[in-house]
Length: 264
Image 1 (cartoon, rainbow, N blue to C red):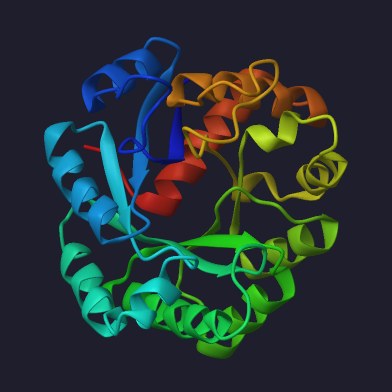
Image 2 (image 1 turned 90 degrees about the vertical axis):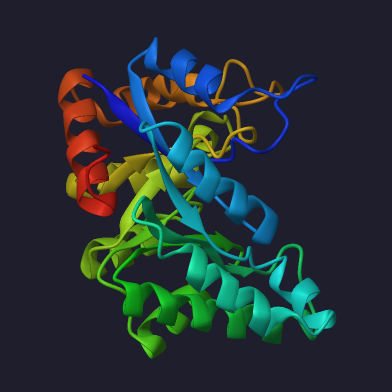
């Protein structure tokens, strides 16, 4: 049963040599990963995303300003202009999500957090007006992310990319109907909180991703990640939940289409 990698960065270097879009997707297809969502995190990578989705029909796209990049645009007086360009890029028919956006309390502090919050709220508004899925980046900011989503009114479709919460956040996602996308971090020895969250997650709200070239799953942690590594995470998900692998893959595929629409 095939699955999709619902979050990857094909524009980021993979090891010593850049890997082309077609080569990366061919390698993924060889192990049953039939497509991916290419994700932008600043203007340059969002422009790349729009170009990439036109190169290969196995790609859909997401565009946004990463929460750690929004304060940099604000410091240069360019945040409003950048947000306007994100909205223009998002009008492409194969751009299906606004992301990754959200809050990151690990790398940003001080006055940068105000710009982060403002940018997050603006991305929520763009996603709602364009009827696009919202891909959330949430690092050390679970309660605040949920608070902003509730204050603004969440878009119809919300994905917590690289889900990093615990059972409490999983219950919130279950209640709100927000998808939880699990990455290679689930396979790490110290990730008991993620496995506990997965155990209670609504199966209809489970997705899988790589966040490539980051977060490579065990046993290849430390090497560059890529969409062809998805099977390691999916097999771990099946093992941890006691779910039949084929049934899990089928469910993930259905959930991914519900989140982003069809690829062709």
